[in-house]
Image (cartoon, rainbow, N blue to C red; front, side, top):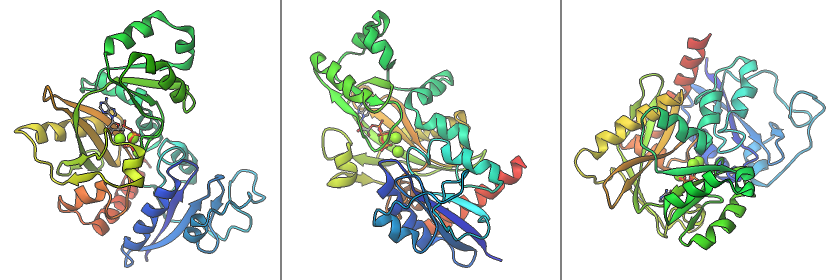
Length: 345
Ligand code: ATP
Ligand code: MG
Ligand code: MG
Ligand code: MG
């Protein structure tokens, strides 16, 4: 019999629309011989949309009221007789990529794609991620993490470490994606205002040394012994790879595989697996790197557990270039979900 796949998409994060596009692509390519897709949309108000055509309803911006189920955020009259065999999570950012949905699904006792709660929660938080990687001896760009409270108090220690970073710096909210809230600061006098803006997104903010970099990415797929794709490169159109470049003008270009100096690809592969394991990841991740143009040094930037997932997104393209076509990739992710579930049971 075919496995029923509860395809979760949408969600409450600013990446809601990107998720709809990712999920449509997944639904169109999941092997129809093995899988029967049940789209499960999460509207912008957090309500689960199961009736009719959830793709069309979310795309139209529908936000139905919650049904009369005190413990479940389902729309009223949700037509679902039983749970799907496996959940396929295509929700980017907060709600889907930060441990929330994983914690929600655990008590349902069904496999779900991707890693568990711990990896997701740690991996979406840039500050926690860096601390875990550093403690494992992995290279990260010099940074200072600060809370809003430390900034307001004018903590002397924090101010000294900020000054030691030099200029330019990148200011980033700890928990976000798609470059939202990220600013490059070139003059000391602009730092306070940039921090204020970052604190409107998060109580915790990172300030990183701004390097002149090449941006490399790699796709990791698997469980305890994951495989890594060829290395890809992003060539941003503007000064850095910002929101506009990612989703609005699409002027940045990519290279798969990237042309790299001797030894760099091997190092990327090694760090990617170590970075994946250090966070207890499972299933998939896109691991992003910076190659410093002036020193040639390689740094881990961040990990994305639900990266953009249309058939032309970086993760699937890098996997395809490494011998795993898109439909096959989807099958493997479902098989990995089942394997992880059985290993835990
Ligand atoms: P994603 O959409 O990939 O999840 P994100 O919002 O998590 O992105 P980052 O990848 O940390 O954010 O930063 C966004 C972009 O800003 C990077 O791709 C790069 O172009 C630039 N950038 C960030 N940090 C630095 C740095 N320390 N030095 C140079 N450039 C940087
Ligand atoms: Mg990110
Ligand atoms: Mg992301
Ligand atoms: Mg990034």
